[in-house]
Amino acid sequence: MIHIQIPATSANLGAGFDALGLALTYYNYVDMEESDRLEITSDDDQIIPTDETNLIYISAKDLFNVCGRELKGLRLHQTNNIPMARGLGSSSACIIAGLLGANTMLGDPLSLDELVNMAAQIEGHPDNTAPALLGGIVTAVFNGKKVEWVKQEVRTRLKFVAIIPDYELKTEAARAALPKEVAHKDAVFNLSRAALFSASLLTGKYENLRTAVQDRLHQPYRLELMPHAKEVFDIAYTHGAYAVYVSGAGPTVMAIVDEDNSFFTGKMEFSMEAAGIYGWKVRELEIDNQGAKIG
Ligand code: HSE
Image: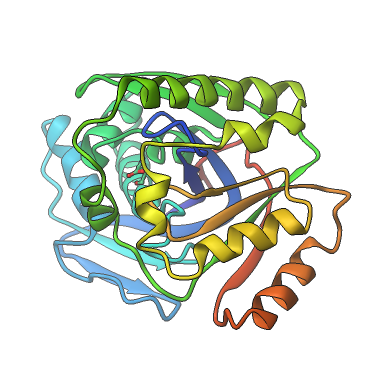
């Protein structure tokens, strides 16, 4: 039985739409072995597909096909901690589990670059799949077939506080809400901020992060689909967050907070409740520099 640990991921990081993402200390676990039929179980209450539409199975089968091998079946056991359809990379975690598990079963025929490419092809963009596999903060450009990427390990005093609503927002719907074209000045607005984000995070210039997460390509549109999220942004800034952004396609709101801001989580919970915002969960996370791992 192969045991795989896969981290949650937060994509976009404000302005870096489809290009920036980082891995977080929040994990799904998958046990996997080849079998003559498909058998899928889980030990939590998230509803998962237990047939051939299961994304871990699809990804594993794709890798077998690429290697000229047929995958008859799999015995899979999933522990799903990462909430689904919340902008924390739950589908990327499944893709990476399937690819990494299948690659291990076949004796590692695919290189790391090939796994990064294949994962992005399945997901359609690389900004969750690449950090889920590699860890750290990943800058990735996908030309539709091949990903050019850089992983950087991050040693920071920062906490990433995921403020997770009790409602879902499917990536498909969140992408459908985006405009087909944007003004040149908005493109410039974003690319300057995306570059500022990585440079500031990696050099410790955290005071830049509030400007760096501003964005005109996706967050304004997605916030309209996220009840109470704008209030949550304001509350997080009131309690001293360096930066607040929509994690991936949403609806999770991510606050970047100094480790010395020790009461941030409790203050968020208290203030959200006082504002009549119920059912959201607040989770303090850190950057995972390791990525998915076997064993
Ligand atoms: N970059 C993607 C998006 C991440 O914003 O749609 C979500 O999968």
